[in-house]
Amino acid sequence: MSASILAIVSWDPVLTGYLAVIIAVGVLCGSVYLLLATNLGVRLGFLVAWTGLWGWILLMSLVWWVFGIGWIGSQPGWNVTHVAANPATVPVAVVQDLARYDLDQAPPEWTEVDEADIRSAADSHVVCNDADPRRLLAVNSCRFSAATDFVTHRVLITGGERYRPLGVPDNVVTQYFLPSRGKPEYAVVQIQPFAPTPDVDPNLVDDEGTVILPQAQIDDDAPVYSIVMVRDHGSVRLRPALLAIFSALLFGLGCYHLHRRDQAIWAVREAAGQ
Image (cartoon, rainbow, N blue to C red; front, side, top):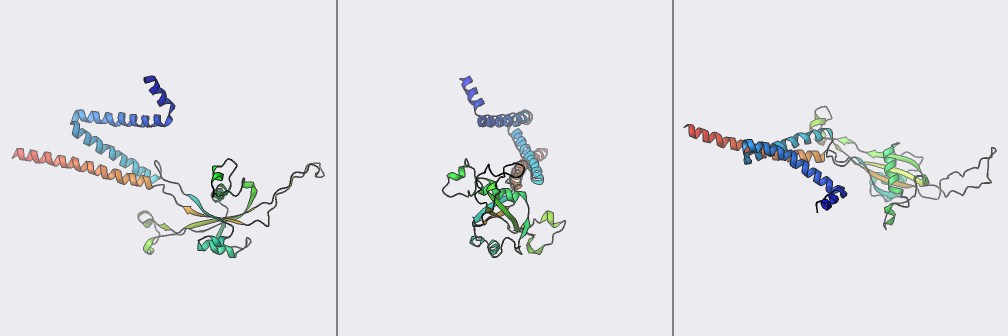
């Protein structure tokens, strides 16, 4: 029986992880409580151990909160909202204005950039290989099988300006005590498919005898797709902040009960002295 249970535990890594955490918490916290209980008593030892535990968690979560480490939330990134052949159909006013400009014209409210993270987010959304499970969905964003099937004309961004409420200026004091807010930041990646590439003709060679490979040509009849994305600033410090607030409440509750116990003891000693 013990051998079968040991085999199950060693086979399931999730169960092994849960057991490791439970045993570690039981040994570390239990050993401290056992030491305190033998010196202070069962109830007082538990109260001291409980308060100390949440005090340590409070300090740890504050460090996580300040430096953005530990049990963090979601990372910043770009989220694709629309893939449209006509920007005028996108329900965002600043994106609809792109329909009035050709590819060789610079929209006044947009800035052309060359950022790899924006390109990567756009490519991963519209490129699906044959094994991609998104192809099984009735409605999916798969437009191409490889990133070499299209050309990226340009990458545009707009918005994202930071401001503080009530017109508070940005200085050394306000940047720490009054967080700024940001307007929505949009990015548009405009791509166009290549025309089908003809097969390689082994009889077509250059002067050196090398086979001339066909060059990919842009399909002028294909539409220019606009991949619209919005910036997600993430919530890196949200979880540490909530943990710090929660642990501060429990730590304060434990300190309050310890203080009330001290007050009761002082009252008894004063009454006995009288």
